[in-house]
Length: 418
Ligand SMILES: Cc1ncc(COP(=O)(O)O)c(C=O)c1O
Image (tube, rainbow, N blue to C red; front, side):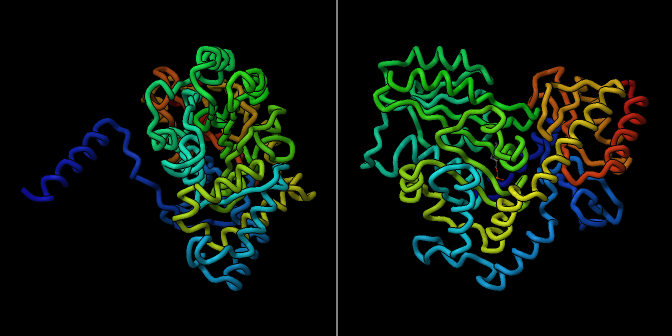
């Protein structure tokens, strides 16, 4: 007996994944960027146009963010030094929290090393409380959209709830949520509803107004009410006229909102905004905040600059460029004869191909023509709904978009897609 036997089991699992063609570890290595901004990557010296990045506003090369990062690194050093309750908060971390709270019109914010870490802690803390002796009542039912992100699923798993305390509502179906809430009136003291804001496979958004209407009706039918928790990682910064995300587009707020600084804000790290009581409670209970380092000072400074930038004239222009690019590309693809999996106004646009082999072939053909996109195949999407996921950025130029359209035309014709 030896650990080699265990390693063989791990190897067998990796082989199984490879055989199922669901390998994720064959990552392209981007050596650098041909020129800035960031949509012109270099891979083994060859230029590629990036259409699969979450850097929706192209901020990761913005001179102000880069300068802020350098300055903060000079001032505070490269790392946070320790977790905040031990070493104290660096001012830049607190400034970022204040800016995020202001941006989202909330009392306060708390930042984490990532949105994934935020979700794990927020869900565990709000479901379970901070310890076995916690005052938080655990007579709770958690109701989750059926297509929620893995970090939400894992956050709920961590709470180790009994089977009857977990329910799923049909994807983006407020009516079904109402039925689930109705069925459970009187069985639990409180309910926690959790959903993605933007569902990143298709770029569709949860209509928070519809959910809010249902939730508010049930709030006084549960002794401790009904809470709406929304993870809008792909929405914040990138969606809505002023970049306030799914809340802005839906016209209704979450009770607790989770975001990331690692996508539209061009930096890294996660955050939660909400009422002061909730944020104070999270600062006392969120394990991935208390026992894990926060983002580096440079990262926090870059994010702070991005959050402030969004409300300037330049920020508004950047957001408008993103909207213009989405409109232009959608129009162009429709003209070529492509269809979309859903109607979306988000920078994620899903070209419906509907066939696994052809989807992979299109991705490869685009790759050969210097374009990076993501193919999304069954079982991630239902059979017959295979898609090419295109992610737009405000810093794609018209020439970039035209190059994309030309490449999809050439490849699509060859593959008999259009
Ligand atoms: C809905 C959702 N939540 C959380 C995350 C994780 O964000 P982060 O990279 O900040 O951990 C993602 C990233 O893909 C996401 O799509």
